Image (cartoon, rainbow, N blue to C red; front, side):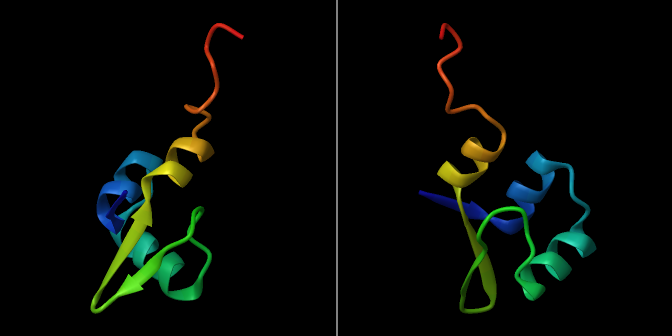
Length: 58
């Protein structure tokens, strides 16, 4: 499952211009995959980065 670059950027608190610059240079905090003229971001990697994949009762 993927989301668009701007949705991922908003979740991570990254501004639009910065998000595109990071994606273009390969330094976005999670992998950004170029598909045609847009970028797709794996949702699982965003969830993992935010630590939301951890068991809250552990």
